[in-house]
Image (cartoon, rainbow, N blue to C red; front, side, top):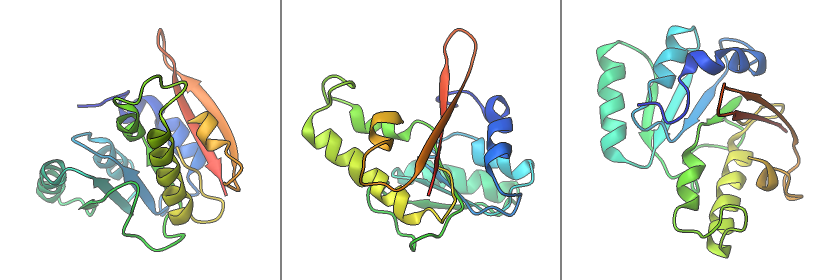
Length: 168
């Protein structure tokens, strides 16, 4: 199940922001999406997919193993990731931060605990992202705590999706 569009809909954006097929890619909140498998078929081979759900992780591990794909799949909390600093060239967040806004009041004026969770997540992304690496949300991204530039593109027909690129 693809929460947003599938990989083919924004493949051109991934290509534009990856330094090559050797890029070390981290997918946050993979769930049961097939995006990392599609990226692997597209030639990206150093992919790590994470999710907080052990059930989702086990299901994805089985799928990747059955296909003989070398995708690393592990349980990880987006607010406390088990990776070294600057260990990825690209971090992809395809909607997992939406869960941080559940029961938080208005998404335009979230509760303080929601803001803290979003901040913790972005600090982790900032920590694991290598220099010049992009991360694929605007007021939070523009916080002065982060030394990165932000660009965004839109795509879609009747409903527009946003593709954010953050560079350290």
